Amino acid sequence: MGHSSVRMRMRTNPNHFRATRLLLRMLGYIWQCFYSSCLRFWLKWFLRLITGRCELQRICARCKAGALRTSQIEYSLKSSKSKVLRAALSLKEKDLDDHLTQIIQEKSIKEQKDPAFKVNLRQCLAQINGYNELFEAVEELRREVFDSENEEHEKMLLKLWDLLMPSVKLESRVTKQWGNIGFQGDDPKTDFRGMGMLGLTNLLFFSENYTDAARQALSHANHPGLGYSYAIVGINLTEMAYSLMKNDALKLHFYNTVPGKPRMQHFHQFYCYLAYEFDKFWLEEEPESIMEFNRYREKFHDKVKGQLQMPEVTLVLTVDQEK
Image: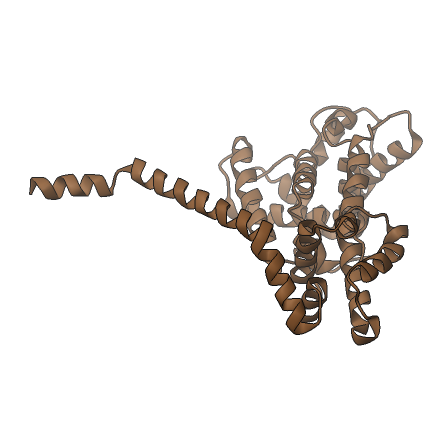
């Protein structure tokens, strides 16, 4: 009996499990290093020998257009020892075609034997590099500070009010009425500090393109028991979308939903999905108070992040567009 208890404690010793996990991670790292530095090269060489196609051609041939193909092309380019291939991950749109020609020459690809390859690879390069360019544009808009002296900024803010509160006239530019659509103070400009003009642009895009859905979300936000600060939460969701893109979590989604270069409107569309789905999520969860916002925000974030890791992910707003 005593010996059995000792054996049981040894089996359930948490240090034993930690050591096992550490060993498995080390073995995985060693295998990855061996594969990437040696085995992968010879495997690619062998497959080219028997198929007559380079790795890029084989990926384009066996994978349908979308995240599966583009992510594998991206990994292949990133892992390549060729400077020409690695450089394909940091191109501007105007340089795509010239660089595509360089890749075909570098890999000695006979276009007449694989006429679809150039078109398919170009699409992948447009998606990969377009993602990087889009993030630069998103970052630039985030860094643009809301300026009350900027006439365009002011027009956007006032248009947001008119779309969300069409039957209520704004008494003045600085007023407590802004609280009716979820801003914290008398002047909304202070709430845009973290996300800059990106936050306002997202809120306005949702209100312009999904007006009924935005007004419905606002009515839910003003619920006496389950309410939340509509505009503040919206800006918080902008930060969520921005962070997901910064961490490359939106790649599979964009690779599946945008056949070429993703543009700013595609980022705004993803924001609209978050705004619409968070409103539904909040109502379904029925939090006790707004004080629990951070906990439910993280729960929603984890849900979305999990969905974004699925190879076939397409997080698209399903309500009918009005424009």
